[in-house]
Length: 286
Ligand SMILES: [Zn+2]
Image 1 (tube, protein in one colour):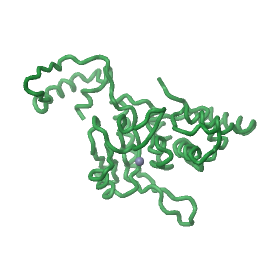
Image 2 (image 1 turned 180 degrees about the vertical axis):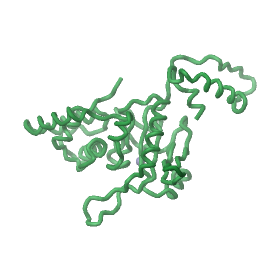
Image 3 (image 1 turned 90 degrees about the horizontal axis):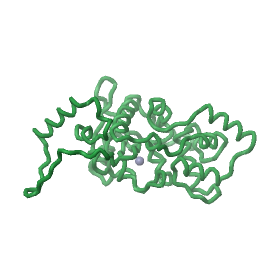
Image 4 (image 1 turned 135 degrees about the horizontal axis):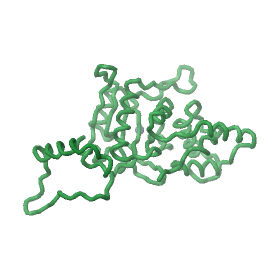
């Protein structure tokens, strides 16, 4: 991880001169880059204007147990930078595997879009969490979902905070796979604790008092139409058809939005509470 600290934008590393000096010494001693013979490269001056190529953090569940997840993510044709396993390491902690270096692409997002930016593998860090996802419902009704363990959530929070800080990631760009690929994906599912992350200062949330007031207004005056819902979903980042009707693709996007911001019901129906949250959720920050 030392390499990432060295690449941090100006300001982030202030107060860390001692650590940086130490890392610099280590780099010279152990792993200084070798340039081709005949090339005179001077790395002593670093430009002030630079930032990370990473813009997004994408959260997933693996749809399997630790063994299957690690096999797929290490040897299969998909991968992630991190796997937060459910393997206990003691003291209430779980093992986190770093499977792909942060400065390389992992293959976790697939066809994806957020605020109009596509192919997010090129600009994101992918975090998989060992979790089976939807379990077969006993009564043929809605599925039950496997819960994330407290130790996994604590690890995710520590990891996301560290990555977001080092790469300067905006709150609205900490997302689920279902947010960026709502037509194909439902992970990390309705039990992923987005609200808790937001209370910990991670990711985007909304003013709940303002949402309640907006909800009461929608109940009193009637719901906005599908075109408005689609416009708002676009404003807050989602790729959604602008058809003006609740077509199946739009319903899937609404369900993805609900899983993230109103997980108590994610049926894809644009009810008053859904419209209210949409109306107060911040768009892209500057
Ligand atoms: Zn996924």
